[in-house]
Length: 131
Image (tube, rainbow, N blue to C red; front, top):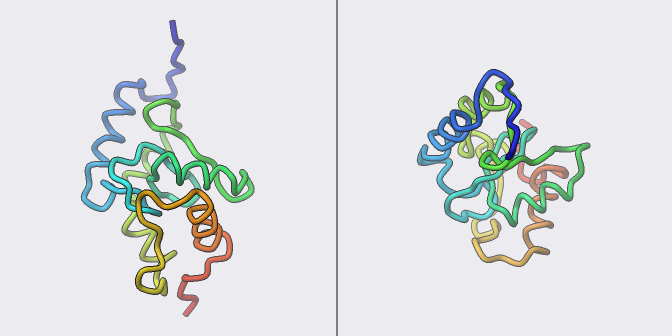
């Protein structure tokens, strides 16, 4: 049997709440590659991502972010509130403001392509408009 620690919300309620967040049109695809039905969250960047992109986010180390599955991991209530407010569209509007047309990897891109894109997007902030 799995023991679930209650931190203000039981696990079933957490998954149900996060499913509602994911069903918003802007969250139905991965923030970084467009894969349908992301189930991972990059906490500090406030985005929902697919498994492949979650691996790339995890590779950035906890200095930059940490990744959780909202269907496998218990989340703190403040994390859930964060994702009820932020969404992929809001965060991509910031991180991809100056992203050239066609520069974003597509679903099915290689892991290396995904890794480079995510590092450029979140760590180097290549496409953020600083004005």
